[in-house]
Length: 385
Image (tube, rainbow, N blue to C red):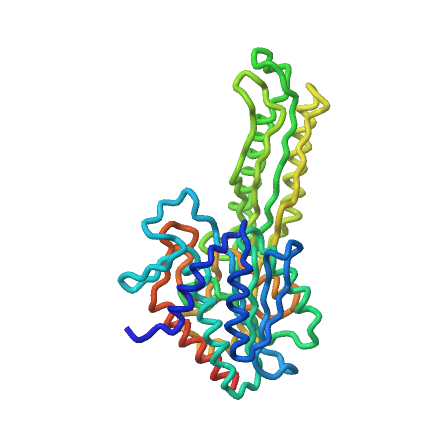
């Protein structure tokens, strides 16, 4: 196998344990210093604590729309996972590089940084740009500050490439996501007199039953897009907590749920339907206690992505696409919907590695995928000259 130019840099990036709950600043400053050694100016956009930052860099003419390479620097936790290798020490074996973030998505970041360094010596007619964000894994949080900065630029990008792992296939769409927390309040009491109280856990399970009824309607009668593995909007409860002791009727149960929606479906309308169901549940529970309530809190949300295949930027990128297969749509979310919404820029998703390896123990990216990404970005660089 020929040399993988991004390999050493990727090893360095994996060594930064940038779990979303921790700082990413050491990694950002490392990349900033690396780029500045070639005279590439970098702008950092920090969070309120100053312990996390986005990075923006650009090479080429400033007055022409460029191509923006976007990636997130945070990774998901490794706690509780059965890793057979050290997760934050890159391990190469049998054509694969193992380590947390190897495919999601430091592999792409390494390739993008190498390409940006190469761009310094090229006669670019359009700029090549880099955007690195923090806290994507917990709801595309950090990139919103970076987008506020980019909105102030007089020249918007011609195209944004989000390098999430797609096995180097072009993707033009993904679902949007909205996550919520439902606080189900009841009336506590002694379990021997349970029918005289309002069991908050029971109220929560009734709420879940309503959620599942709405899911059945969406599955059977809702909008469909067969480009997705799951061709309809989905609702999912991922966490539930309630109760203190078995002999106490619980007065509080909290559950987290999400909506992953097609472009044709409105999460607000789905939530309104769920709230109507909740009001009926609360009305019945208040026959026993006026304390019964269900309060729904919005946690995070990001829009879906729906890039039309005929726009000029897509035709431009397809001219040297890494795969001959038609563009697809991916089940997972990305920051691409926000780039499109906030900057009105066409977005494609394409990067090395498979999403099937992301968030798992012994996460890996194939070296051949890194090579394919390097070739593709090299073709992009040539097209910009």
